Amino acid sequence: MTKIAVATGGPENGPAGKIPKQYIGDKEISFVTDIDDKTPIGSDMVLVSFADGTSRRFPKMLYKRLAQDHQIDATSLRTLWVDPLINQVIVLMQESDLKMEDIDYFVNTMLASIEQKCNVANARLYGVDFYPQRSLLAIERILNDKPTSTTSEDIEGK
Image 1 (tube, one colour):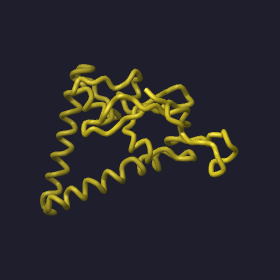
Image 2: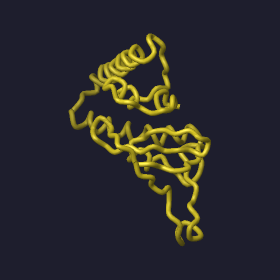
Image 3: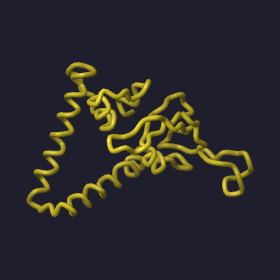
């Protein structure tokens, strides 16, 4: 594992040697570590350690999108996190020439598929308990028998 700097000192970042603070939402980032892990499609992962002592794994491209030089509220964080995904799904729907009459079926089938994966993951980990905050990446890792993290936050998506 290699620690990567959050930012480097220099004229553009203030006095030399001073590393500007970065945040994901309202949580200050202490440091970011490259980890030997990949997403289901092979993207690199990082472990972000926060000033409050918690840590969370992120796909590297998501970390780069979410890390800000200032704190943002939960609504703004959700917008940064989710809106690009919505755009990507719409592009895939366009590429597949999905008809307007099929959108409800598509959305309902996608939700049912995600719920089924979540139920299988819950059954494997916790029996029948349901945690609606669990991330899709954590669910996929559980289904593929890959460890998610040493923290419950990674599993539960907090």
